[in-house]
Image 1 (cartoon, rainbow, N blue to C red):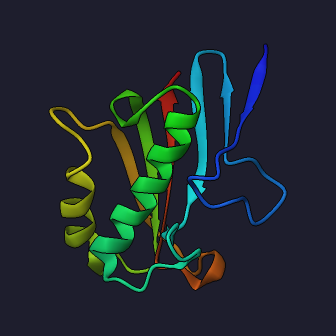
Image 2: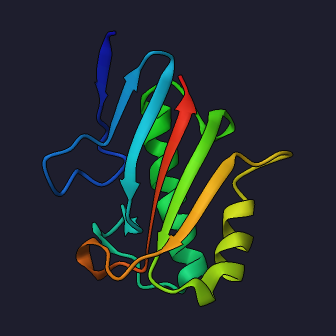
Length: 126
C-alpha cells in the first residue's frame, strides 16, 4: 500500500509528531483540526459555532491539498469539551454539507490540545 503525506500552509501545522493528513488506498485521513484561525495563527476566540466553522475550514484546506474536498468525506469525528454545545455545533457543521451528510461521531472529552473547545477529524475519498 502506497501512502502520501498531505501538507499545506493553508491549515495549521501539526503540533506534534503527526501529519496534517495521509492519502492511502483511495482515502484521505485528516488529523484532528483545532479551530486555529489561519489569519492570526491563534486559537479562534469566537463562540463554539465559529470555532466549529474554523475547524471545518482547516479540514477543508487539508482535503483540498490532497485533491479531495468536503463533498468526499465519508466519516468525521468531533471531539468537544462540552456536549451542551451540541446544537450550536450541529448548526454550524451542517452548513458545510449539501444533501446527505457523512457518518459522524461526536464525543465529549476532558481536554483538547491548546485548551481548545473542539477538534474535528475526517476520512474522505481521495
